[in-house]
Length: 398
Ligand SMILES: [Zn+2]
Ligand SMILES: [Zn+2]
Image (cartoon, helix red, strand yellow):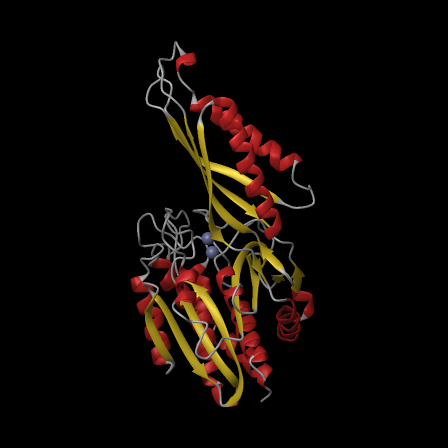
């Protein structure tokens, strides 16, 4: 039978398996860097398929390698495994069994599709070219300060080497796209992100005598206005940037000036040169404010994720394959999003293609990622498997 038809038929036959896997993962979510049980399920599944399996990479990462019968390229598929600290509101029989933890970012879908793709390709391996590496990584959701993300750990542990991975692929569920559709971008997919730490140290004084102190609460208000003013008017409006603060703390009592205010935020950008421009410009702005106010101000940027950029040549081939597998009318063009993703660490090393899988039930509004109501349509699983298996097989040909 023709290979493409066989992939599509087998994907249909694996629908129940996909659903079972997804519901199993969904019931037992685990937080970033704690995916022990999940990794065990993944590793056993890959071992049962006869893949060469490595476990315990960067904490709980699992990698399975499958060899085709003919020489060809080494292509990797990446799935993330972690869940989020949320209390699920969806009342399905397979709802989360772990209080306060939920697969609200669809990583249960990602793992199920990755495993089913490994099964599908295993059954066809005598007819395939190249090698396939299935990478299941921990901790995609932002790690605590000082800890590295799962992707960083996996790359550092060498999962892209030996043999060298020539292309890496991944998908993410998209709740604002109907089931049966794929969205892709030929180059920049998602923003680069830095975590921002702004600390303003003043001098405590009685609330009645502010002239004897330096008030960091007042200065933090000035700093916030100055930062947004700089972004709005000193950066070319054609270059998207966002800086939002999500945390502010300072002070002890209503009638004592605080001695220190700390703010923590997130800065996102789509071009590296604009990132430099913003970082340098804002440091200059804060130095000026410090001089004028008498406070000490420190502004630091901690790199979180690089820009996620698809490889242009690989994207062109991937889109051509997806068009053949799913039909060209199922592919939609994506404009770069200001969200970010640690898949960018792989994409910074080897040619990558990252795309979105629609999980919205047609005719509904769908719920956002990271929402306690997030309830992706399981009909998307088979589409995801067709896309994954089709791409892996198509892109490993020499
Ligand atoms: Zn997420
Ligand atoms: Zn996610």
